Length: 317
Image 1 (cartoon, helix red, strand yellow):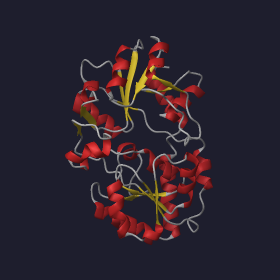
Image 2 (cartoon, helix red, strand yellow):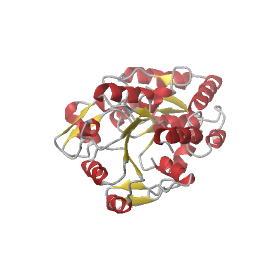
Image 3 (cartoon, helix red, strand yellow):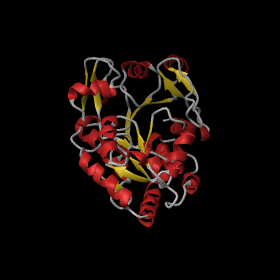
Image 4 (spheres, helix red, strand yellow):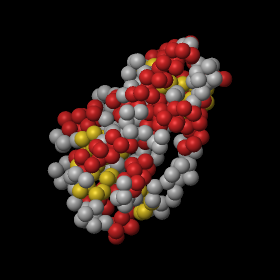
């Protein structure tokens, strides 16, 4: 979303990141978009503005409901729907919803939302950060890359089970809140990136509060019975940095990841993931380089120019 706001500002349309309260610039981002809180948004908003929400928090949806903007977009990175205390969940897809447009990050996710809730859902895809070709050129040849990079995210328990099954000396775990430049640097020097996030649907119901809801009570998640969840951005960024991706495609990854450009594991299958990590560790430099090049070609077509064209189409700009 930070990239998105910057892109809109770069095209001369004033845009802000809106946080519920006390917004502070994220020090780990290379270029932080302008920030305001919900109250400032309500004060500044006019009928000519567009509001784009990405989460079903009550306070966000309620503010959007009363804001004068005539175009109100719900843009969600996946298909899981939180239900219960603190969330409006399926209400955002109901006839009483204030939202006038629905977007998602992949064709599969948009199709699921359309079928599940009977609303027209369009695709507003991911797009590359600044100068993807420069990111790719910063990577060393595969004869100089070493180690496995894993992001500590919602699939953290899988990492704990995965580490003993590969050489612990080869594994680097990076934690959220990482510096953006450091993240790209690590992707440019590691032999592979392992995507462990398998979506909230695979987490036992009683554990979902711990994984996704920060200790809030009386919540649960509605999920599709397919590989539509997960964070699509880290594998996408890995491909742009020339780092081979190992994992199952989810979310936006469904539109570019395949067996030709990634080591594809079976969804919800840890043994399959370990098998693919092992195959990648055993692969020679030439084979890894071919995978990396194929992934870069697949991911780099999602450009800012392409995203801007799609945005103009969706909003009639």
